[in-house]
Image (cartoon, rainbow, N blue to C red):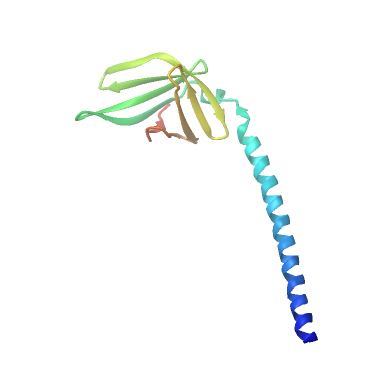
Length: 133
């Protein structure tokens, strides 16, 4: 009987040790995640995007067209191109960059996308803008 008690006590000590190690690791992971999220919350300088032009292919009925995004004077200008015709581009949107998340802010709410080197993937409509200039 005494051997069973000692064996059970030994197993409990091992279980407590593993639990303590696991909870310490979880606390370290939580601290690292908090530091990472704080770094992503900081607004980044987006001047490196100045003068860039981005295009996303779209369909207007049966016709191929492009949604154009031009960044100039620190603002985003959206327009639709179909052949030589350009529609829109007269209302600028403010740009905010946090981590790799780019946010376009306008009176109607704007949009949010993910910036990944030479592409911007918009979340609300799934358009993929590719850098052309």
